[in-house]
Every structure is written in structure tokens, then in C-alpha cells.
Length: 240
Image (cartoon, rainbow, N blue to C red; front, side):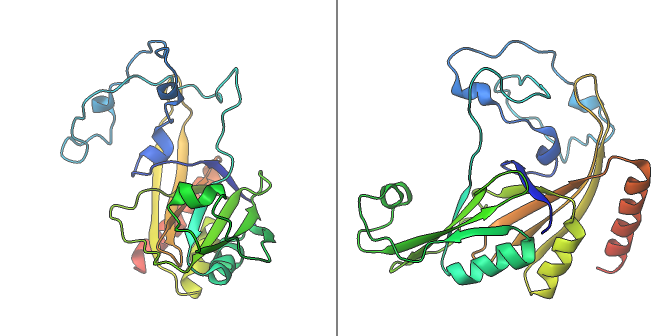
């Protein structure tokens, strides 16, 4: 079993996977405490053509601690799928999650929350499979829907599920061997600041059987690990 854990679900851009902490304060009536703004234009990677100015919204805390004082966490992302058997093979055999359960029956009860929540018409059949991650029992759910047209054609894609892993290149190899599209890895290092640690990581994405983009990243803490990651990354770029 590959050690994979869902740590965050993020709307992903090139740097937001490592830099952006979701502003939980947006859910609260009280404003966040003022924090010293970070001048991104002094960062060595800053290029105004690639990172044009955006209108301010509010300042985040940049806290390295989870939300304090109340329970509010991402519990279990749910993905709609068209063929549950096919998707179970992908998430168990390619990604490496542990299958927790598969419903042995279809649900046609129109009073079920999922019908109204997902816009499923009465009479359509649905059933679920759930997976364990390395730090969450039932950490991911797949819901198959039958008897209606299900299409995943929106661009840009509306969301991704982002996994932290210690087997990023293994996931890449298994996905390619199974014929799935891989968004090839990028490698990045973000220097430490007064409030955030240095981050060294590799990330990639795999497109699942229903065109969901599933993203993965792997941190490298030691210098030896980082040097090996750089070597492998150079080899991957050379063979593209």
C-alpha cells in the first residue's frame, strides 16, 4: 500500500499548491487580523508578464497551524464517475489507495441528499465506493450515476483533488503503463521567509477515466533527496 494522504484540497495554479493557504476567514463575519503584506515583486522568480497584478481581496494569516478553536476540516472529497468498476481500478491499482467499500446495490431513493445536491433526476441509479488514504478512513468517495447523460467537459476544470505522496514517480509510471494521460512533473523550490518554511517539491497530475484532474506533490526535505529529485527531473525532461 503506497503511503498517500490527502492534506489539502486546493484550486490549483502553478504556485498556489505550495504558496496559497485557503482563507478560512472568508467564512467568518469578523475580519482577519492585519498582517504584514509580502512583497512578491522582490521574489527572484517574479516576472510581471507571467504574474500580473490582481485586485486585493484580504490579507491571509500565513499561519503554519491549522484553524484553532473549532472543528472545520475537509473530510471526504466526492467525485462523480460513469463506470464505478473502471474508476475503482484506477484509484486502487494506479494511484494506490486502499478500497474501503463498494455499495452492493444501486440507490434510487429520491429523498437521498445526493439527488438534489448533484442535480440527479428521479429514477436515475447511483452507488458509491470509498477509499482509505494514509491518514483518513474513507478519505475519498466515488459516486457512479446511471440512467442519465454524464459529461465532464467544462474548461477550465472546476476543481482538482491534491494528494501528498512519497511515491510520485511510481504513480507516474503506473499511470503511463495503464494508458492514462499524465501532466508531466514540475520541480520547484520556494525559499523560506519569516513565516513560512522552505519548500522543495515535485508535482504532477493524472487525468482519471472521467477527465478529472488528480494532482500529486512530493516534498523533499534533505539535500541528498533534493539532488536526486533534480537528477531524475532532468532525465525526464531529456526524454520528453
